[in-house]
Length: 482
Image (cartoon, rainbow, N blue to C red; front, side, top):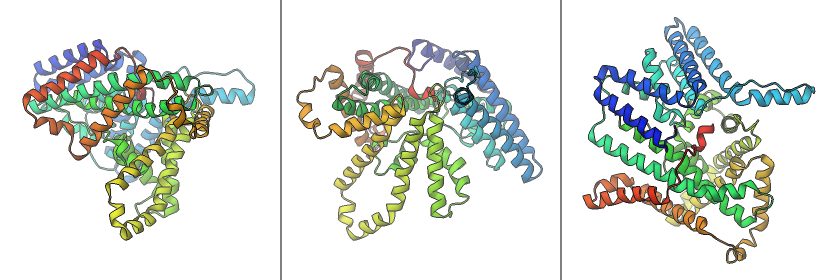
């Protein structure tokens, strides 16, 4: 029951109608029932996985909250986190580890038989945060119903945002209801998310899939175009899901946190990962892995650099597994990004010195544009490891592009560009323009001040794009696989 399917919108209408008809005290239970039904639509196994994670998180939080001493609370937290992390690791790497063991020992390969559901790691991360935050005293343990709804809330279940209990739990009560402003904003975000996914991401996908399917034989220019297209395909696919999840939640009066903030306008790789791309995951890694590894904000430079590389390595491995084997390409993707951020940290003193000596150059718009272009291309290199089927394929792609760069300007005039290329380039151009405009002031805020005919004209244009250019169907969101 994907967000782009007709059956989902029928399901949404039913859940929303029941929500509006029921008294306030029954609404949390109704939304939990709807969320359970949404999870079960992916199979009974999906539902049982979710139930197990909710049970572990709830019982661990209760034990942590009831601990008489700090040591007792810490034991409860560690036990709960160990169970959750073990389940995640086994589901992602169990079969790959057993296959490797069979290869080393020359015995028949065994399989766990586990098929983790879409979004499994997202709500496991939310469950870990829930347990740890109770142990830290950031919020008290909640009742089973509210804990279950916080973890299972269907708009964010498959691909985030990774919401913290301290932000979401206070909103899940009898007072839940959407005001007219939230409803209008929610519908606008749903439309924008659909345009990103169905119009932009899905129209870029054929070019990307074609080139990455045969990297050893695709022309360098085709590989380069596919890599550019993939960067925007992934952005629109993932941020489109987040926009829809936030918009759907607003229809029920629930406000989720922003998860993307025009990432390809970042001036540094650190800014890209910490403040613009998948913000909820970046802050999760910061609070639950980076800070514990460094011990304090005043940790030594070497320890901080090692912690950074560890965080990005774990992020890479988090993307691996579940059909990807060990996922060495994802690990390379994570480590390369970690190396970028570490090098940026080492260069910060030189950057501050340059800015102090040449403030006019450092603060000029042209300098900012060059930094954004450089950052984008540094990130672009890493997407090859993310998208390619294997680590060796990624290296082939990058070698072929690097080897053909000198010839690419001459090949452009002779390359057989088709409709898919023209449409993709136009959609990317429109998206970049929209992000540039929104950098100064969010587009939805700008549109709110327009005359009514212009506002409605924009929304009708969005609907027309969905009808005329949208590629509909059950195409899954990319991050559901992680």
